[in-house]
Length: 339
Image 1 (tube, helix red, strand yellow):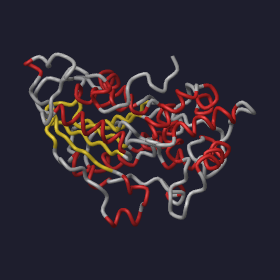
Image 2 (image 1 turned 90 degrees about the vertical axis):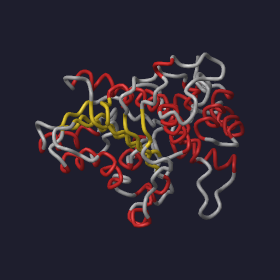
Image 3 (image 1 turned 60 degrees about the vertical axis):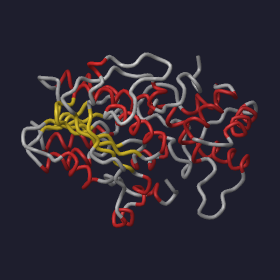
Image 4 (image 1 turned 180 degrees about the vertical axis):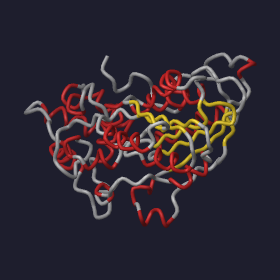
């Protein structure tokens, strides 16, 4: 997101396309795995006499969820948890453990960015937090305790930052003087290290902030768990709609659906092939090229600029066994994490 984008109110991205993908119908049950401000949940509830289970780890989402629950008391349920747990939530809240659609809108929300106290953005000074939930280590904990090598791995692998080692070295050198505590402090350090951005260029700290946020919240791990969970709880004909905002997320979704649809092999070249009874495709891809926002939507909501929507339908084949994270295009397990 550009600085201008970060001041925008929350607008559900690709909402019309998501609704067409889900085709809301009376009596069906849907999972909104990333509730946020509730835009997708509300649209589904208003489109049909359906039921929605909404998940979000962010405690601040509870207020919007309470308002929606008051409007649709018998049809809306909110659970404060990570979307990687959607399978467990469905097993607990749905009698037969199956749902008709899963919607995931990935990444950080405008509400989180706009709150300086959350530490997601360097446009306003705030603590180096970046947690989507209320538990676990903060971004400040990472920049002040990881080794230079670990920091470089995080920034390179999750931020796709070519200057990761230079940034990691600068962080380690700076924290010897005093701990890095605020977003502006870290952004200024990176700017001094890499140079000021030219007009219309991204700020040099953008990729590092993305990397820290992804690491703090285990966003790619959550996505992998959610995709595997969705495969297990979608009934035959069930729809999966995933909106991504950067290449790391999109690569995981693309590879997962590619393997599950039989478009490319589902086993590692280093391991045995999957059992014959599990080779049947568990998904049928609806749009082989991802849907992107129209020019009209981009003019109304520049935040949608990098959004991609991938859609698939569940077949009647058994779910595949979960594969290694690296198989889904994730950075190698353990790199960038403290042992």
